[in-house]
Length: 154
Image (cartoon, rainbow, N blue to C red; front, side, top):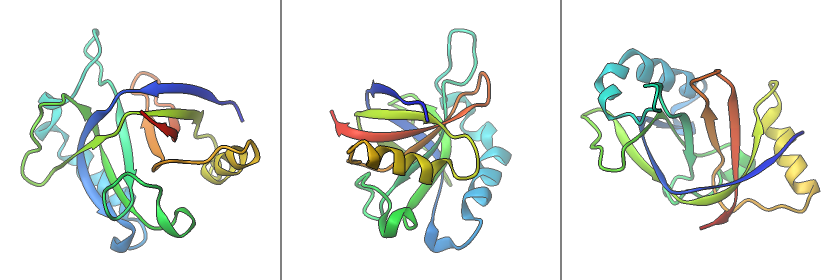
């Protein structure tokens, strides 16, 4: 597993929020809802110089919204299916805005169905402890998804 260490300033995501309390398949339902209604938030999205979306995020936090890791061995928590937006953006009705805290992240590609547990084990093997919830980032340029593991709060 290949890792990159990066520092990312705090950033905002507007999306559709749910949690593991919503039952199996809740993440896919959130993405279906967000994608079907994306036009409502498209003007708020951060874009690159060439007009492409800056980032698509599957943001995660604990139930207290403190951006701590999911509980019960990463099986219980909240999820936000959305897009990176300007800091001053206001979430329209039916949408939720989160501000992800600034962190130093260990980043790896989410390759294969067991990428998350393999990555968690890899970090544990290196003696690296998580200080927050893992974030999923999909690069709109190439569709590659990455897992962002927070290892230090900034």
